Length: 238
Image (tube, rainbow, N blue to C red; front, side):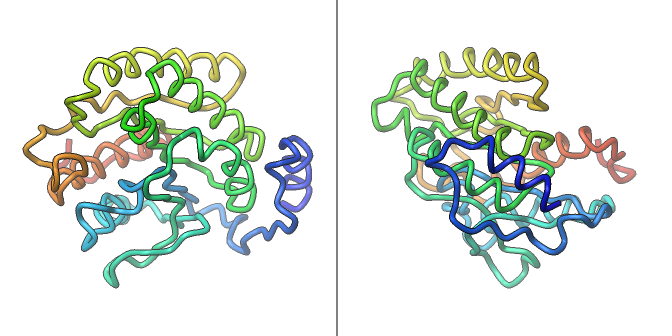
């Protein structure tokens, strides 16, 4: 694993290279899936701190289906009910702001799967869909430079954003093309359009998902993770 990290480190732009890279001890455990929740306030869990947003219901769903998970990231927050509180969520951050930091985060964590949800704050702060898609494209470059064999599940913006409705819709058109370009380059990435994942009435504050909506988000992530792993959901679940 040290050799893998050394190769990945050399591929990162100089500004992304951390001075010290600690490879977690469990990184070589073949029975554990290392999952990095990567994003902004929805990754932290704003709107439902009692469930750490989607992270607790996602953990519960995967555990019920026999998937052993190690959440990874340099941040830690969540309720006592969540056995693993690691994540890479930065409340208020745009995708553009994350770009120069992402390589170091991913290099240190070496995730098997990255759950990427970013771009909402870019739109809220006036960036257009094209610029936001370009930031996410660069962010993916950094992810794959640091962990070439990771699988990225990139979700679209699920917040309603009524004032940015047109740019939100355009972003949902651009991001499948971004994902396709990375797949053509040999990267493992998929885009999930979440524009209609839950109605605006299920938000906690008009922007962040509420507890019920986060359970829906968790199911979306779990479905995609299990499809990637070839895991069949428990009997009785779709």
